[in-house]
Amino acid sequence: MRLTPPWLRLLAALVPLLACQPAAAAEPNDAAALRGVTEGKGIFLIDFNDPRKAAFYLSIIKETHGGMLRQGVRPDLIIVYIGPTVRFLTTRPDNALQLEHEDALESIAVLVKELAGLGVRHEVCAIATRVMRIDDATLLPGLTLVADGFISLIGYQTQGYKLVPLF
Image (tube, rainbow, N blue to C red):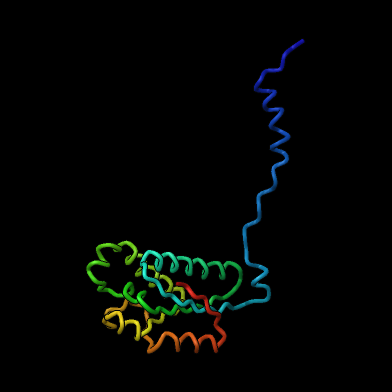
């Protein structure tokens, strides 16, 4: 009687297990939410104290824009910046902020430019720049100063934009 080598017994035991593995899952999509949707009108309200968080969410908004395009929906997106977030939107941040968060501030500047290039509108609340003592002339390129971020939110929602609050 001939003995089966251990490696062959192991292989024989693994083959049925490998054959029973589920097929690769389909790529996630938003088909149910986007059924019949051809245009996605969204307005993001950004109010952060942390520049890393602001940079992170700007990158997510960029992904959202791309995800809509990949799924056949034309994105029509607006970002409204209020509160302390405006401190991260200047070419001349205060020294302490610059020293502690240089990488995040650079990411924000790049993402603002990239998003603007994709057609995303950026609005900065003039009340916030006044309260945070930001010189409006130093706002990053691609940003539009508006009188009141809350008025922008009300106006755009009245025009059919859906609010996505981020804070």
